Image (tube, rainbow, N blue to C red):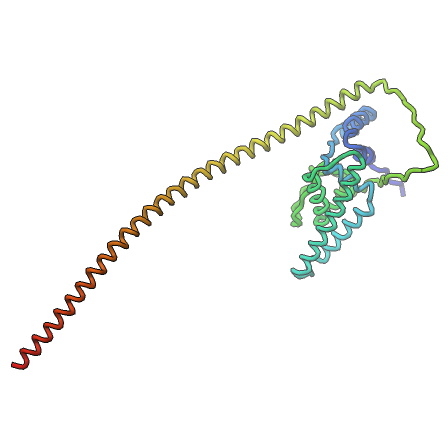
Length: 301
């Protein structure tokens, strides 16, 4: 039986997405030129997208500590298998345990990223944890994570409606397992040999890298400005609503004051009317007594 050759694009992608985030674009472009004889492969390499920070952190975790990732995925599979037979109390307990596990693994992933010189924000950490949660809820998300070829974070509801087309570098990533690349332990018996090798293209590469960073920064700025405009519109709308409600409150307070004054006037009139009523009742009682006395006198005649 002939041996199946691995997909060259997946092998190349496996190496590319293992690189530091800043090295991805120049390395990808260099590999596309290197394989220009195979136009199809070169175009596929050139089309590989740079991972988001959250996706890169997950990819790093998969390569640095695949055993821990496999444990997360195995727990997720076990929970999915047991879900139909669990009562509400057990489901809540397992959900709590799942959150604790993903939070712990996310902390470890952030530490690995920090060791690589990348500091992650809380927003990025939330996306990493959401991706790990999705991998526990959805089998395909688990395959995407294990591939180490994520380009964006994943969020899942557990309802099976997950679209991973935009989350992985290539569709063939599902079912592929990233090559483990643990950090080698330093050898205390060996001292590093440092040599300086001049790079004739260093200036050009630096300019290209700087241009790439500027482009990325502009894209981030564009998104931030878009979010700022949206937030400003929301604030203006809420401020207008606040002014409207305050005006209504002031109007109601004025009306309440008017009604309270009217109540006082009515109370005074009521007191006077009750006094008149009592006097009238006394007159009725006296007249009734006189009528009865006159009737009795007549009957005696």
